[in-house]
Length: 520
Image (cartoon, rainbow, N blue to C red):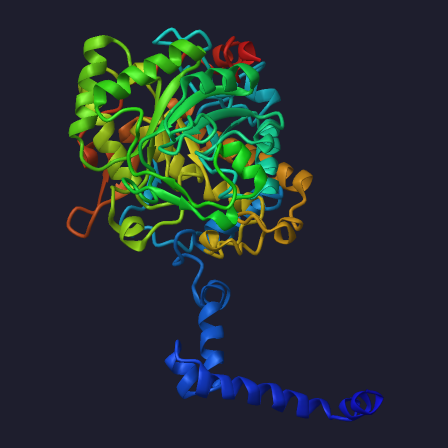
């Protein structure tokens, strides 16, 4: 044995490399048939596959310019990172954006902007920017809720995101006085770190799932009673990444903890059907909303990506007739989000946010229903100018998902669906998650939200308003096309936003329902 070890020890290092490469070549030529390139070009062919695997990173850092990347370009990512770290997020020497490009947004500033008076809530707190409407006020729910922040964390499940990421986000929203949407993976311990929570469920009914895979109202009542952090409930009809398509959580990703939270079996693939068991018609959906609201006392809303409008029209007509219905509606953009989806869905199914929201809002406005609904926008709106456009169109709050992920370290690696997220955010790998400093990352999400609100308020004041709810369709102008270069939103989308009943910031500051104060 000693002679063998001595012989191996005398083998030059370069000969070991040649031997390993030789074995790879033998495998490629004689045993491997799955990849033609590596079979025909042994050893060298592997370099091609490796370069392809790091293509997104190569383009992101060395090839693409500051404005051309999708879904978020370098300037957008840089602004989020700097805002989250409380660093300089300004840009110098003028904009490098093509201001004549299609859909470029212009916020019309006033000749003399809004001036904050003495003793104004924003004098002491430049980040104070709550929702101008109260969820559940019109329907007289037992526990109305006014979101204390107009920017909040969108639906992202524990399971899709790591425990460390969810915990950092929840602690972050507590610092920013925002809310945290659970996503459809159920309420985990990591959602209960002090932040307000919107409990969200979809076709899998995780967390409120009966033995047969249906919806359990009894479990919902117990969940709400035991968790006062839950301030509202959202029923997912569809999501922007894959509207009308169910999902699969592979058995390999289902840990004991995830199985307990979701109410499923360990190691078995879990299917989220494409449609709900609890309802199959609009009247049944309407009835379910009222049942949940009555039993829990909480505001209840719905979330959907917008496509065909006939069933939305049916819902609006039913709300008009009965005087009841969802307290809020979250409109998701068809551009997709953190949810993994086939390209055919992510690229083509459902309308982009701006078209979908405009179509939906008009339906409810025509029936005089907009004042009773809190409208929430979700679709790459986590930037002040885009938010100004959304508020001018009728939004009352925005939810952000990928922007929130970037604030805690996401680098847009676009491998959320592989369980190999290099930043530990969209993975269940304990090793990768260990890189997340929850305390630090929660500070960064909270700071991103605060910086966003402060800059959004500055834009609002420049336009002559105290609160973004006061934006009108004529305050925002967009580039349309070469023949019809630019016009305001009212002319482009053919409607005027309903005026929001806003008096002043002080009234919002004094509101009993601000941040769910009475529900705790």
